Amino acid sequence: MNWNVNLNQDTYKDIPEYVISSLERYIEHRTPPGSFVAAILENDLFTAIGRADTESLKALKGIVTLIHCHVRGDCWGNKENVKDWLKGS
Image (cartoon, rainbow, N blue to C red; front, top):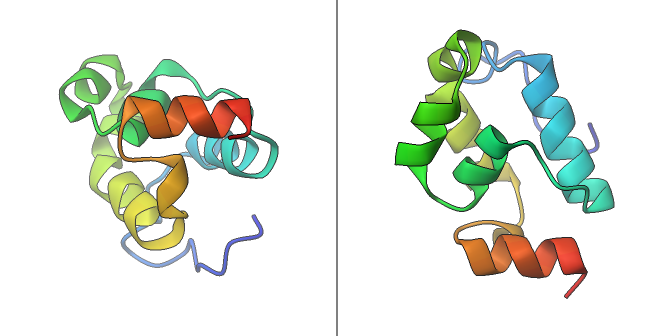
């Protein structure tokens, strides 16, 4: 991960590696994430909870905190931002 974040902090330690990898691909290569990560990026937590597996649901607070604190704001927050990010806009 190229972000300046310590993923071993208590806040982030439960985030599954596959979620971290999905976020990295999305941010660094504009690769569409899976439906769970996409729902979080689109700020649709009701849908995210419905799509989460047990591990991801346990880590939801950490995932949201990670995105909020360490991911540039123009690539998340609503469906349009995510769509524009994936298009390279």
